[in-house]
Amino acid sequence: MSELEQKGTVLAVEGQVAEVEFSHTAPAVHDILVLENDPTVTMEVFSSSRPNSYYCLVLSSSAELRRGALVSNTGVPITIRAGRELLGRVIDFAGAPLDGKGRIAGPDLFPIYRMSPHYRDVSTKQEILETGIKVVDLFCPLLKGGKIGLLGGAGVGKTVMLTELLHNIILMREQASTVSVFAGVGERVREGQELIATLEEKKALPSVSVVLGPMGASPAVRRITAHTAVAVAEYFRDVLKMNVLFFIDNVFRFAQAGNELSMIMKTIPSEDGYQPTLASEISSIHGRLISTETASVTTIEAVYIPNDDILDQAVQAVFAHLDSVVVFSRDVYQQNLLPAVDPLASY
Image (tube, rainbow, N blue to C red; front, side):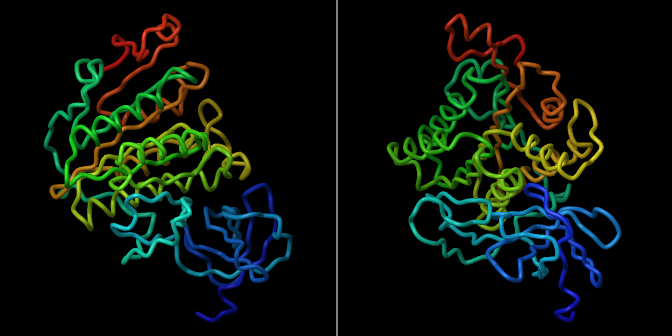
């Protein structure tokens, strides 16, 4: 392919979405584009907008972008440096370190977008994973290799419960072949900092890999952060053959980031005003968090319920993928009964 055929022209920029025209060779979805005048400005091809033009997610500052600017297609998607070196480290969506400990020199380049495991490779074993929290172990037990959702409105204790589960399972069990991946998607930077400080204090950080895309980041970055964290879990499962505990806070923020991008791209909304691709976006994450015959991935995810409305479409889209559900109640919380779990609504 000639260099000219890889060139594109920016037609429009709106927020974190740029529309780019390619008059010769069409780019593939997830290809990374770079601005010719400033290679630090990168974009990811998202979808087609019209013949020969494409919506692209801007992954850096969009201040340098303008109409008519030339971009080059690298022809490759986002890849991260992967290896045991990811343990004990905090990275962003592109695998760049956020902890000030220098670059990560992992032995492998690993793409963040991958297909789900084949049916023949999926493990069907069912084993209870004790958490030490009675309301969870009795009413909605966590399956090893399964998925448990912590559902609740703002400020009722989802993150506290998730952190407690992380603490109990990692520190109490101390399994040599088990590592943890924590995905902070669209949550507060303060909460991420407190989590890392707690893990360091308990000397558990060396067995945990943290991927952060806080609420201050753009919706494109928040959305991709979830895929990067899943890729890290897949690397430990498939390459290193290690059991993985995958924590994500918060799945709703992943759906919300997709909704923000969908509005910018003027997509006709579906139920509750969400993007029409909501179900498939949620499935793209959960379908990859699967246990295989060689190693397991156990998922613990916090799900924010907007306005305490559990019938919200983004919340309902997550239900199909969960084995157990822990529902937090504001009424129970106001009675100062902690953790504020409603055992009748949980299952």
